[in-house]
Image 1 (cartoon, rainbow, N blue to C red):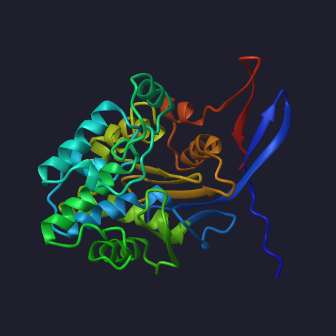
Image 2: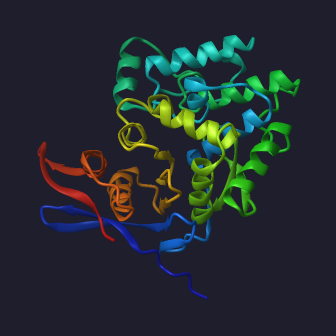
Length: 316
């Protein structure tokens, strides 16, 4: 059977001419968890990349690590590498007798382009703490130290902590993990469907207060700047829309849940991050979320000669 071609989620319009397309799959869940809209094949497994981080953060809580507030939000973060992010990662490590040398994140620059320029101008080089997943890794290491688990192998899929992550992903998504790979930070990466990803975010916002899932959701929503950064859509959305939970992932993955259980997840097939904002804004509007923050997220101008000559816009 010939695979179906995914639908166009966004189109690239320059000077009134459509010069490109971004295809992918998207799912929107109603408040009762039923599928309200499906584009493409949201039942097919994908690597959610960093959209899995809430489930990873919940696993360190299940391992007994007592995190809350900004620390728990940073454990679920793809942080921008701003000063307050890096300071807290170092503090979290020190609080558990760990050092940046214990991290197995690949040395990297700040994820935020403006922060990377400032960082380099100050004479700094790529560092493990600066890598956007360092908060997650710091929490994982702290959980290992607390339990006496081997710290050198904390990224092995067979490690006790990673088994907790695996089981937590399956429980939240309501489906088995389809495949296990390696994420950009070196951590195990569990593949689930986009429908399962939306279901997982719905699980987190509807979980009972005090459960690991709800604690993670509450920390992320209370401290969104630690989940992303001051110039990031996840932060804007969680700061300005009460009760929303939002987390992007590499290769153009996004998941969002509203406090009443409505949820969405999508992936742009070619991994183009430039299509994330327009697709997310359109999907939010389908859920009835409007306002200046949605307009801001959806704005993706194209420039010609330093002037706006077009845009990337949703096509569904």
